[in-house]
Amino acid sequence: EELPIVLWVVHTTANRATGGMPFFLVYGAEVVLPPEVQLNSPRVAMFSEEEQPDRRYTDLELLKEKHDIATL
Image (cartoon, rainbow, N blue to C red):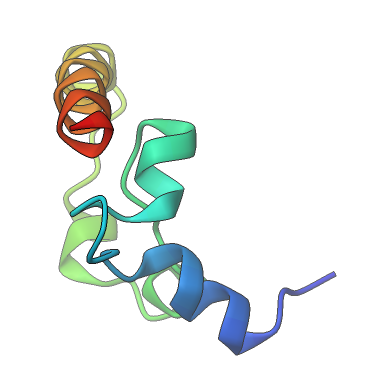
């Protein structure tokens, strides 16, 4: 089941109050939208399974920072 476009916009647009995207603040990762996958965007094309653990660690560190900023 696909989410309506409006929900994708809400979840992937930076919020003024928190300065972050709701999707990132909840899941700790940047969202990859379905059109990016279907069209093989540069971000999708450059995905590397071997680098993923390091990138995930970086994302989690950024998440902590974003949570701290949103709390202030």
